[in-house]
Image (cartoon, rainbow over all chains, first blue to last red; front, side, top):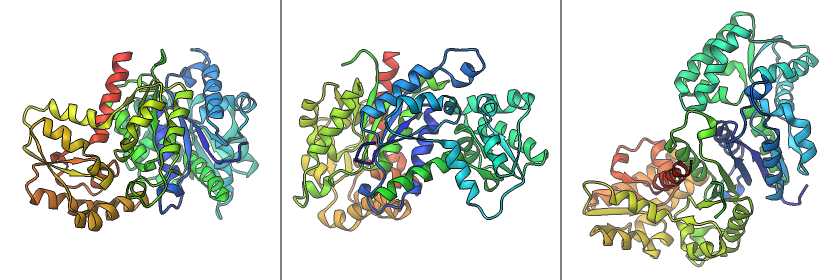
Length: 236
Length: 236
């Protein structure tokens, strides 16, 4: 860890989610001047193998490119690293090993934020890629808090989540928001009291359509931004 | 110039204007997937000496920090560099000399965009810092197109522009938009047919308050984003 605080952001997954994360960082930091805002260096290179396809066995692994980005951020002097993409955390251990700077884990940041709440839900729905769902991070950590997880079905993922997510990637936020809204409703209908928006494209789309259930969601991108902002505020 | 396209963005002046520029880059680039979006590395470190105070002789020069950022972007592999801050272009020559990658000049991008328009105004108002106004870039280039420049008075800068600009830097967009709206109205009242928003904080604030005269403005941040996006599209 270097002596100076500098947040390295491994972005590009997707580029819009990266911007959304940067905005949350700014908003999470009380600042009266430019100079009080969190310093960052952003590797926002979206020419990276598709994470969802790689985990479905239908494309090359993004790991070499992820490690390249991590190395670039370390070379630039990053003291901490954040990755505003849930699915990319599939490769967390390999990336942490390749990095001198500690990588703030998006799932830990989310569950720590959830654990601080006074009243906790009993059943939480998880909107995420198949890769994130198969990894089981959110389910395991929710179970440790005695919270039951509800997952999208394979049909729901195919009909709503996946096309919604790719709509965001091509800038069609309203279309994405509508599809992801269907996914959310299905989880509420099966008994979810709250939802974890565990793919960083999802809050971008749901906020664009002003989804009426946003107050019933946990946003890992927001939790990661608040954790990083706290680290910066503690450093000052 | 390296073989691979990578836009280095020297940001942090301010951090919100940097995000606004990144959003414009995304919107200027037709993309159906993450992979088609422009790759960038962003040095978004706002702990840099105040440019306005330095040029008023009331603070240290930001040049060493600007050169440091330029060197970091070159080390990261930038093939081109953009600086979404008009005032920082005061140090353009020194930065260009310190950079292997060419730096796209924000004033050139703006005037080239203006020159392409079918009907041109006769009188253009310039909303900018005293540093940018004293440098005279916009006035000289507008004169070369037979366009007269109208500048804010010292009183207007003190009452409206400077506090409006610093309001944006502390996140008070509505307050900033109101003050900058007064500055704009004063220039229109003196005969300006269009305005150049030659400080990257200005469009952020005017868009936040949905200023009714936005269709009568030229936005250097937008022109710079379009120029950079064109370079990327030509490269693909």
